[in-house]
Amino acid sequence: MMHDFIFNISLFLYFLATAGFLANIITLRKDAGKVANLFLYGAFVAHGLAILLRMFEAGHTPLVSMHESLSFVAWCMVGGYLILQSLNRVKSLGAFVTPLALVIMIASSIQKRQIPSLPPALQSAWLPIHAAICLAAYAIFALAFCLAIMYLIQERQIKDRRLGAIFRRLPSLENLDIMIGRCLAVGFLLLTIGIITGSIWAENAWGSYWSWDPKETWSLITWLFYAALLHQRLTVGWRGRKAAIMTILAFAILVFTFLGVNLLIPSEHSYAASFK
Image (cartoon, rainbow, N blue to C red; front, side, top):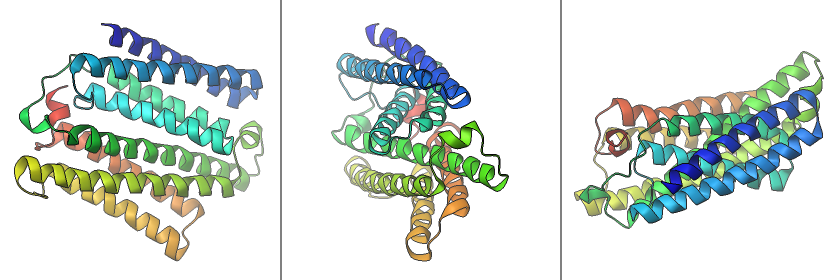
């Protein structure tokens, strides 16, 4: 099918972009970064086209199966990176974002790609709203995770006074911290809207806004962790290493909420696992 063929092309372009960004940050060759950027734009456009074609063929928004969910997260993550890069000129972030996006794309590619038939509960106008917003939140939090990794690497180099090639490629600690804070704020806003829309959808589908389903419970735990992190940043002034480590821990909880709950715990939300 055409959407599968274009998906594979985008996967190959993501691989080339990742190789280019890694070459750029290791060798400091500017031409490697420029070529990697071109590959990444090409991959993003091809990937978006693959999602669009799959949606036309399926007759619904392709955010249901594990293949579709992982694919959409990777696409949003790359889109968020391209926006962040255009606003802040941080091409070195590509060396951290594209490997993670590539891993997510590979994980998506090995899932069954058949288009599932929607159960009655998913035949709702809330599907594209709730699912897209939540998955976009996951993608933005993934960017915050990459920035936090960059922060810790940069901080370690400064402490050890190893001001080598990678140090010159990475933004200052202050800029990294600012970008982490902005990603956390945007991701938290999206996650909040996603939980609210999910509650409204649950009331329409199951007659209750909240049923303490494992997915709902872990989503609430994730939301509370990010809320506490943002609260500490805004009121106590958490910055730097502690905030970066907490951002990484929060992302680990998010990954469990996204994948662990779907794959390991029976839940009313285990559609993605049942379609894998």
